[in-house]
Image (tube, rainbow, N blue to C red; front, side):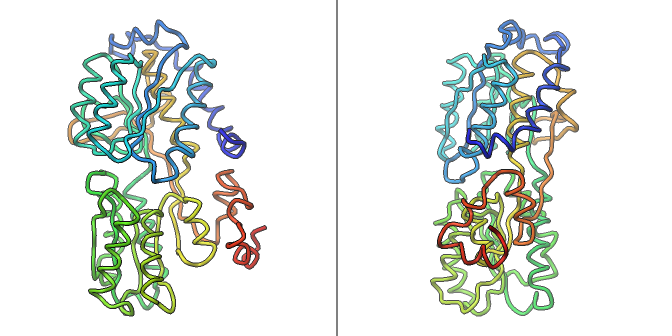
Length: 370
């Protein structure tokens, strides 16, 4: 892990070490005798990590190294993370679960490509005594623990930001809603929160569920919306994440708009932050990955050792297939030009030099970002 991310993870690491020392319960206390095998290994445990895709920068830039680092911290360097990325293929991810079972991992962290499709594979893992942590997306099946952000609140933050950006002109034209993939349960929560803020306050001209969250699909959808509504009628775009915002903004530029309308986003990807600095993208949602990944690692290590989750989880959630799943929900924040210094730079996610590349330098200088 690079120096920036290591700095950002320091406080989380300290918390996790305290949890590791406190969580000294036995497998018997956890109520699941299948977890005894992991406990017998001491620190020499294997954690399987399955991430859904590699187009969104966060997964391999932040989540994977942060989880690996935390597992090392919690196991005195003896723990091992076995990693696989499904590249947006649910069938591949199910096969990866089978491989993890064959490799006899002691716990699994799964960020599902398709929350419903993965349920059978998760049950197979559980049948083999492997506890499963749902990471970022609430997968169906016999999940043992879950950590994510308040995903409905993400939509509220995005929708409110768009309404605020439009101000008195909120009903002077049409907005386009570019939601995420229907296979991602988080996308439905983002959409729900956004609609709660947008409905009745703006005119929604077109709305799309974007296949596989792909920027090129968002770009094609946006081209269709511009053609249907007319470029001068589009006064704002709700984009569920930064990757899609990039494709949307490309389509808006290609249409020859004199001024870009406000476009939302999520994930605080570097390209998204740079577009915010340049005034091309109005906002993103900053989700502190330096907390989420390490919490998933804490959960997985505790479960692998047969320890209770009471020192880690603060609440419970219900999935369509299981009630009262122990969970930890991480808070989020709106990211705009006004608070870049107080969020992604302060937390060590990006340095000023990374953001202010030559094509962004003038905009950085204009806002005093040096």
